[in-house]
Image (cartoon, rainbow, N blue to C red; front, side):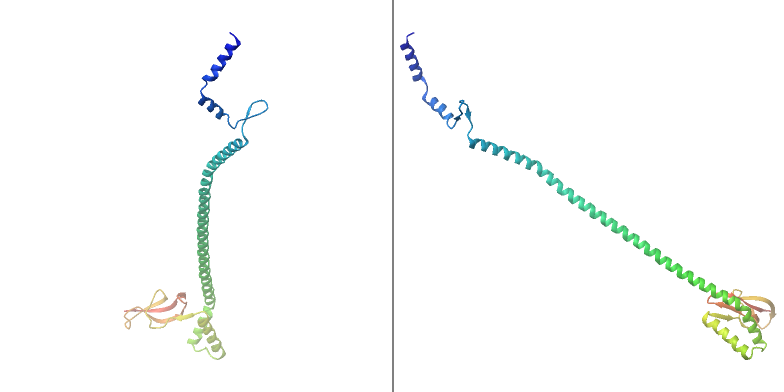
Length: 226
C-alpha cells in the first residue's frame, strides 16, 4: 500500500469522527491540570471543598453521637438530685422522731423524779412524826391529868403547832365518834343501851395522820349496842 493510499485512509478516518462526540470529550477535560509527568492534578478549590465536606460530615456524626449522651445525662442528674432530697427529708424525719422520743424520756424522768422526791419527803416526814409520837402521847396524858402547866405547857404547845403547820400532822379520835376499823384500833369493848352502832366510848391513845396517810390508828374502847 502506497503512502498516498495511507494518507487517504487517515484523512478518511478524521472525516468519519462525530463532531458532537469530540466536543463532549474536550469538555470532559476542561479544568483538568496536568503535572510535569502528564498526570491530572485536582484543583485546589475542589480539594478544599472535599475536605470541608468531609469535616462537616464528621462533625455532624459527632454531634449526632453526642446528643443522646447529653440528653441522657440531664435526667440522671435530676434523678440524683431528687434522690438526695428524698434522703435529706428522711434524715430530717428521723431526727425529729429521735428528738421527740428524747423529750418524752426527759419529761418522764422529770415526772418520776418529782414523784420520787415527794415520796421521799412524805416518808421522811412520817419518820419524824413516828419518832415523836411517844412524846406526843406523854403530852396528851399530862394534859388529861392536868399536869401540863407552865413552861412545859408552852413548849408542848409550840411542838404540836410546828408539827401541824410544817408537817401537816393531824390528831384524830374523839369519844362519841362512830367506830371505823380503818382508822381506829379497838383495845377494849363494852355493851351499851345508849348507842345504836359501835361507837368510841373512850380514847386511850389518839391517832395521827399526815394527809391521807395514817401514821398511827387511834386506840380506843368501843361501845357496842346491847
